[in-house]
Amino acid sequence: MSMNFWHIQLHPDDRLSTETLISILETKKVIGLGEAWPDKNGNPVQDPNWFKNDMRIGDIVMVRDTTTPVAIVKVTGNAFVEKNADQNFDWFTLRREIEILDFFDAEGKLMLDKIIAKFGVKYIQASGTLTYCNGNNATTEFTRSCFSQDPS
Image (tube, rainbow, N blue to C red):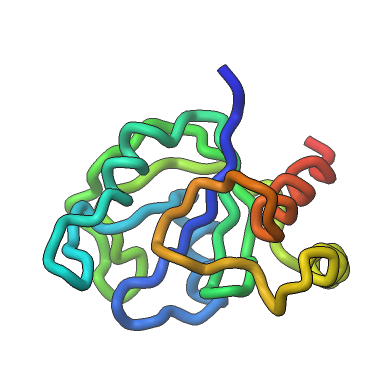
């Protein structure tokens, strides 16, 4: 089975700081999102289903703060529900355990700038809470490039 690439935003309705996102990744070793919520038309979004059913152990996920990468992580566990989430910190109840591969730094910024210039865009795509990386675009290329440079 081949590995897939995703990007995720860990923000609830109120935005968390990048420092808080890093702290969640380092202390809880999880990524996640809410168990269900409606889109702007009142229909259930599919993100929780993709997170539970389509994301796999071994998949690579770029955690982002809107259009800014924060970290690259590898999924190490199946989806589970954490009923004791702290609404002011790791607010999301639907979770997957992860291994942190790297945090976005100056080297990552240089790589991102090159990829963004190559595609003629101003930033990576930031649509939705959870997005499968496919197609020929800056976000997919950046996420795959970050993983391919990982020494582990």
